Length: 406
Image (cartoon, rainbow, N blue to C red):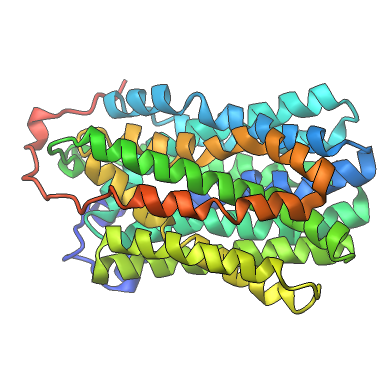
């Protein structure tokens, strides 16, 4: 029954219920996996406040998670395009939870760094094979793909809502409470893979002409957007706490609202893309980020600014799911590699700039770091002008492109 649902086309299951039925396993797994990416920015203020880590050290923790999740993405994606690798996405989500969950149990900065690096590697192991299989389940629908992408946004959204009160009440060691969901989802995902036949996988395999030049432009857009989102997630709580003089709970709420807006923005982007085109949706989302960010920064009331944090999250995530699908359409013969880059490498690459933002925050406070980020959408707007709607090629017969299952 599961196999039939996953390999059906949008025409066979085109409504919202049909989309959800085909994507629910992948949306749920993505939510659990990205919960642990959301745990890192939610926990960073507590490493500063409870462990006396500096801003530069706090930014280094974001860098650790980024390095682990970014560097292995391309080779894992290449492997995912060649082999089935049933075990990789279940192991990845489990490893992400274990690393992130153990990070709060040690006072040693190098060990915290290493554990978050391990969590990032787990994220890297999940995204390429999961993105490949989610594309197969979604067919040609951007709306269906937005369910998978929104799963990750839900994980980010839920993380601060759960992590902030836990760390407030129980201290840093409470991160260990979040290990079991990762192990459980790894088990569920492994069982789901074992129920999916190789025949169904081959039938879902689609190929066409790759367009690496356009994919390179899309990757550049992703890197710019990743810098904005990673910086926003890292510093928005500290901005509320240090600049707006709010409590740590209110700072966590600001982050939660921004990430919650991201869920709505991701789903909205998929629907807009199916109606108005993927490239136009990306361009509109990038352009709207500029006024949204500055509107939040010019508001000095810690309560009035909360809805603006929600607005920033919504607008900034409109292109999210669209870019994932667009990237796989630009590289139709390598969906795992495309997912590894768009969901992993490019989306994580923004963390490489976090130490620089940490230095800016050290001298000018969290507001200074966010003010720098508020100018970056201009670059995303310029780069997105090079994107074009993909040309639909005829699918290559499945028997010509077998997917090996070791």
